[in-house]
Length: 288
Image 1: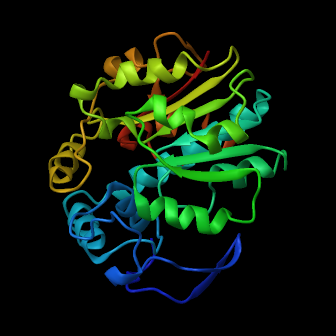
Image 2: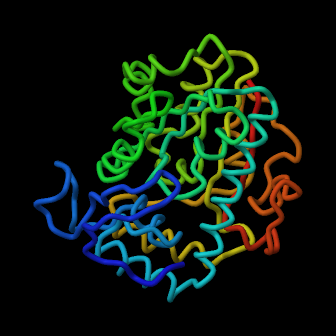
């Protein structure tokens, strides 16, 4: 995790090349509809992973969370590692198109970066309801005709799936990987997360994959303190147990090794230096 980086408006270089950082702490530079007074899950995650696309309110929230539960950084890193391994797995199964819902702020090791190492023709759509995440994503991806980012909410699958950019890049008559990584714990029971997963499942062709990770207090009771703190943010969290998460995969063949902690999901592809029970999240990949 890097040191705090605030009020950035200079030019940085990364794997995309030189890009102007669009997010600053000055409200005049922000996309419309950005709430700078409440911390955002996407921007908090970005900060914990060492990113700079976040605001003071996000950094203060994350620092308090890390003080209460220092293992939160490890939880985030293990989740990110699972994302990379699961994308690699989907590619090994022949999938060449991805819909990453709740994609967050672009950081090194995103879906299209992993995929392009295997097949430069892989198509990727990122979707998130955080305006900063999408504004930054679109800027980074503006010269990539096979990748885009849309502002959309997982809780409105009809609108998300009908988006012209989604339909332009993704063919749902062919296998597609739908990613819901560290997403559904931000969907309350009142919004029926299992029903939402089913809505996406129903448009996925046979052979498609659902990639899912979900926060839990199993193994790490301290995660409950994080869930309590997230009530102060724009994205309250609901931690769930293994049985509840497994139920969300109804209609999918759960691939080996099943619903396991993120650190235990095919670690041979990218070894992790953590005990599985330190993960703070379950992970699974299901085949339609």
